[in-house]
Length: 280
Image (cartoon, rainbow, N blue to C red; front, side):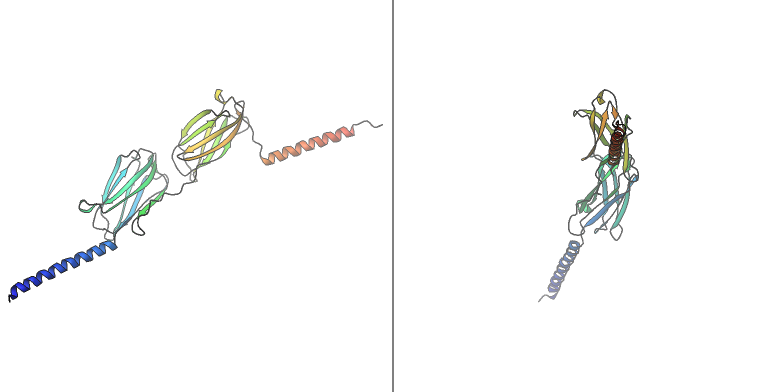
């Protein structure tokens, strides 16, 4: 019996079993620890979008690509996660000239193969961020769709004007800095004013806009409809116009006071007539 040959065969068998065992352990470990999470945070009117996240592959660089609303690449970044798999970076947005939603893509691609891919959408208006808190994760419960901060619906709250004035002051509320399109529709259905403006929101999301009445297009008497639209959001309000000027609005209390005054006048008039009737 050739003991040397047997020993060599046994050594080979042990080595093969060891490799299979190690490969199996690595595959099991990888299968149980996969996934990535990413978040984008920005405050209203900021020039910075903060990115942070976590990945189970801490040894592979993450590449970030930012795509503009017109699908142009406006920024690229690359970083290495720390030993725990955590990562963070920032994007400065003043040079992002287009208004709208930008897509931030994150990708880990070891050895040319795509391991993880994720993307988030953030809104930028006039080189400043909208309030943003979006995230995506595949760490738990499978794929999670990005969640966008819930917006308040665009609302025209009121139209203020002095009776007989030719200026209407519109006030409303929204939490998006996107441009608002304003239309005024005459009583006959014709659009007589079209305007577009940036809302210039204050801290509470309120905006104001003035409309000047009068001229050939405002000759009809009646209710004019003012419509504001921002994206898919739309709101409207009516204003009475007579001879190109604002008709005063009578509130409930004003109507009650007027009614009481009219009744009082009628009562006083009736009593006066009775008192001056000749007696026979």
